Amino acid sequence: MKHRRPTVADLLSMKGKRQLTMLRVETLEEADAAERAGVDLLSVPPALMGPAFREAAPSCFAFPGLEYGDLVTADEYVRAAFQALKAGGDAVYCAAGLSIVRRMREEGIPVCGHVGLIPSKATWTGGFRAVGKTAASALEIWRQTKALEDAGAFAAEIEVVPDAVASAISRRTSLLMLSMGAGTGGDAQYLFSDDVLGANRGHVPRHAKVYRNFAAEYDRLQQERVAAYAEYVADVRSGAYPQPQHLVGIDPRELDAFLESIGTA
Image 1: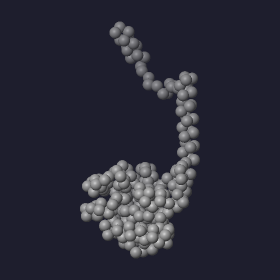
Image 2 (image 1 turned 180 degrees about the vertical axis):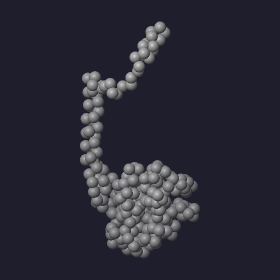
Image 3 (image 1 turned 90 degrees about the vertical axis):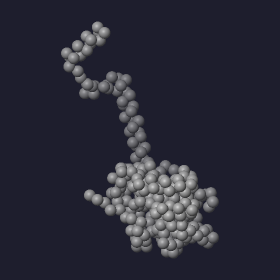
Image 4 (image 1 turned 135 degrees about the horizontal axis):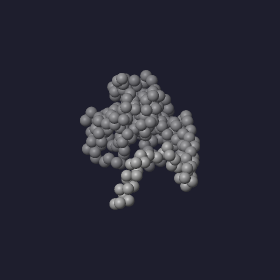
């Protein structure tokens, strides 16, 4: 069965028509679950991309992230982007400068930028906190959005920005705006799988909604793992393992012949 996943043109045609859903996934199991749940867009580490990923999530539009700082020059970004697309990606996430975004766009690479709270650059906006709560700060986000648009990006993640600001910006840009903690004025809602599943043991962002408690389940499984290992150790020490059903047999005549051979060696 062939699965048709959306193109960049398809996504842009949906702008302003309905809210898309987006998750950050880290494993093939999460990708498979997202596919079966009907998630539209996935953010993925480049290492996850490949045939196995596309088998798990054939119809999800995927954004492999080009990690900021791991790549430096425009050539490095372009090379990594092409590798990600060849591996099954549909577009790339990039927090690098506008010249690099522009260079990738010149090569026809679909690029998603980032505005608002940008974790890799958070020192410039006061750390991990909301951005755009003053007119001056909101104007800077607007300027960054238009600059990305002019550089040729087709989308931008907008993170931890007041809903009203994000809405006003989204209505005035052609970019597909991916909202992480920026309300419903954008074009997609974006959360991390770890937060949705309750697997995050650290700080849970205010914008995240937790739907399950995987951390407790992981704790339970770890206790079961320790108990199973302890029972195995006890069985070895008591002689309860291995039992005959765990062993490979040998015909007595073959065993006698072997023993006779090594006895005379």
